[in-house]
Image 1 (tube, rainbow, N blue to C red):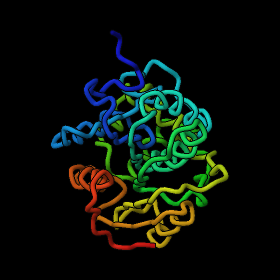
Image 2: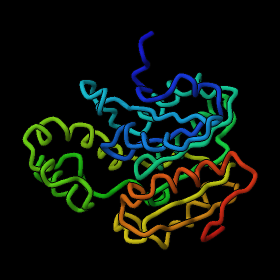
Image 3: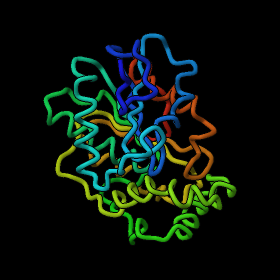
Image 4: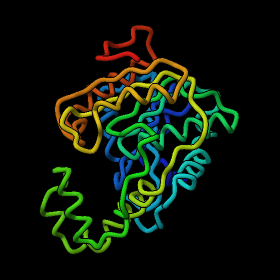
Length: 255
């Protein structure tokens, strides 16, 4: 049976279990969350959607608006999540995508997520990003990536990467530069993670995510910049997994 291109790294045996849905950051792909499978409980599934234009779908054009992206994600996930418990996690662009996806899934008749986890993202009212980042030339996009101190320099100066690898990033940045939040709030709890040295977010505004849900909102910071979670994948995963337990977890702030 052909593997669904939306879920290239999902394990077939995960279907039907309580599921963590993890959404990528701008230019990122499903493989970023592959380490979450290490130590994943046997009774919890992990679903990492792969939008077009990256990794295993590099030959497809990327989606360039939030409406397109969320609609396609909802199409892909509705059947997999129907009748099952699930939580949503997203980092950076993936955070506001998860927020909009939660509303879209409810609009399609599914129960909402049991918890929304957002990471490295300002609250929706602070979007879209300023400027036309998606229109920068390759050298300008490479300089933009350098500001996050995450992508190795040898990749940023690689001719093939500059010619082809920036396509998905460009499409995602167009989403970032045009996204405005749709009406409506969530009813589930929201947990907000961020790096304490992340220049891409305003740490003073993280609690403002609470205005977008009628449920509780917690905030928690970690040492590091925008990609703080790369060194703490297991810790973040374990926090997310507490949504399926009765114990909860200690957080820095509840709002």
